[in-house]
Image 1 (tube, helix red, strand yellow):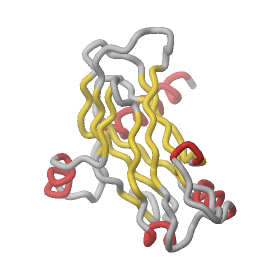
Image 2 (cartoon, rainbow, N blue to C red):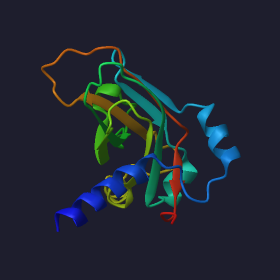
Image 3 (cartoon, one colour):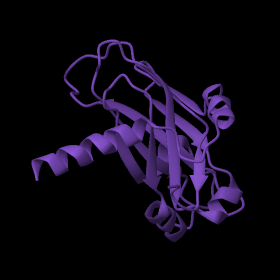
Image 4 (cartoon, rainbow, N blue to C red):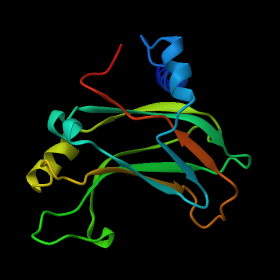
Length: 173
């Protein structure tokens, strides 16, 4: 039993570091050169606009790829991912009024290694739709927030580079 659990854990850890099956080497290289967002110890959050077409499709899976990690002191990191929106009201809103819907979260392990993650978005899009936040004039963003796992320890220099978002209709094998 211990061997089976250990094998499954090792396999899961290895799988997170392997490029997506079916993704060509050219596509990987193309993605590595671009960044949708950069999170640092000085600026631990980033907001990425979600276009109206993507909102109407509401794909059930978001593939996030961390292409670069600078974490020389191996600070334990967690990243929370939200859909952020302004509630539909008659007047223009401010950033302070933005609401967040959790999509999911993940941690890097080892904490200094680039990796890829799949997050299920179905529930978050359903909540967004129920809140009346999906329309032609929607201001919906994907919000990424990086936090230290041990919050009482001070930050050392940390940098995560997130590749352009990849929305999927299904997980690839």
